[in-house]
Amino acid sequence: MATKVVLPKWGMGIEEGMIVRWLKTIGDTIEKGEPLVEIETAKATQEMEAPVGGRLVQILLPAGQTATVNTEIAVIDETYA
Image (cartoon, rainbow, N blue to C red):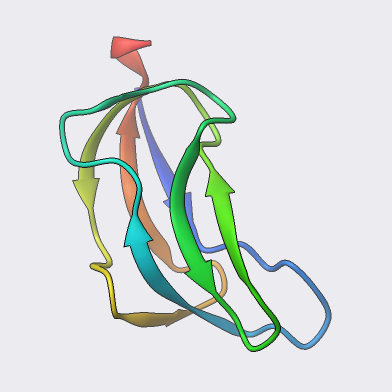
């Protein structure tokens, strides 16, 4: 099963974030809770953890791009967990 990873809303007034860098590349196996990507908001730069375990199969938002909260940024295939 594929899980879509979305840009989280980390606080009041945070409406968008920029991908600083991906900590994993397509094809990497990831465990739930493992750091996946660094995201910069108006208040801070934070590491986002993988919501599920599996294999990173698609990156939808490359580093340097900004998106609104709840935008899909990646896909993890859980069949590899």
